[in-house]
Every structure is written in structure tokens, then in C-alpha cells.
Image (cartoon, rainbow, N blue to C red; front, side, top):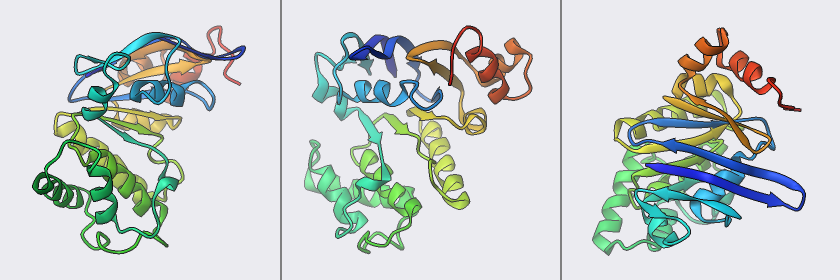
Length: 243
């Protein structure tokens, strides 16, 4: 479980994150939704400990990220930009490299590598150098690196951005699989249809503030809208500038 409590982060006069609170439970997919520049990525980076909040905190599986950042990293996996793949290494080599950052024995690490390759359907490319891989194949490497220590909590930052149709379908199914495994999944997106299909709950952030937290169904009912996109616009437009 990930608990975000009154997070604040300002960059000069820009209030990137301004008192954000929400909870992402185990065994559920929680979406962090908002337009570009709303503060989504800043929130995710504070959860992982990459950015220190000016106020507030994050608790992951009972561990406070400000007091025990290394403990949080052991129970958290972060999928970031697919551009961060090492082109001269195979997926297997990249998983092995990143797995050595965690307290895994050599035998445990090799087992996790095989499990990750199987889970992501990477057997055919596991021993090929990543140079020339498609964006979808690179995305699988990034996801695999986040999974290598078998964390109960997974964070994904716009995981389908820029992917082709088949890669999008594969990534969405992977996210559903995480939920079936009982993991806590928190992912950011600005694709409202994707969030409507995948999420148990969503937290909508606009201009650094959370304006709604609920299930897509409830948000559509509350706003009288047929789609989550229309509900988002209705909620964000109620006294908020989303431009």
C-alpha cells in the first residue's frame, strides 16, 4: 500500500505539488490523472525518494520514505522512461545488473531473472542486445528492471506513452496481471479512456492539487457524464484552469 500525505513541492513560484493526499491500496490499480504539467511526475518522484518534499510524506508498506528511503526502495518498483535502456546489453544482462542493487543471493537473482523474462513474454529477445529494439521491447526491459526484486508495489509513469497498438495492449495486460498478483499498482496517465478501462480508483490532479479521488464509475455518476474524460473536464473545470 502507498499512502501519500499532504505532499508539497514548489519550484520557485511554481506550486508543482500543493498538498496532495491519496491512498493506493494493495490488489488494486490506482490512476494518477491530469493534464501535462499537473504535477503527476513530481508526485511519483517524491514517492520513490528521487525528490524530497518540502512538506508531507509518503508511507509505503508502513515505511516512511523520509525516514527509511532504502527500505521503501526494497518494496517499490519504478517503471520510468523507455529511453533509459542500455543498447549494448541484453535484457537478461540488464536485469542481472539492476538486480545486484537489491539484497538477493546469486541463486535468487537468477531465479527472478527467469521469472521476469517469463512473466513479460521476453524469451525470444532475452539474449539479444537491446540496440535496435522497438519502443515496446525497450518498455518491457524497463518494466522488468522494476520487477526484478519482486516488489509488492509498482509505480508506472505514463507506461503506454508512444507505444504502438500491440505494445499498448501488452502493457495494459501486464498492469492487470500485477493487480491479479495482489500488488499495489500506481500509474500516471493523461489518457482518460485507459484509466477508465484499467483503474479501480483514480486521483485527479490539476495545478498541483487533488480535485477528486474515487472510482471511474462513481466519478461519472457524480458528474452525470458518460465517459471519464467528460467527468474529468467537468471536475477540472469547476474553478480550475486546466490550460
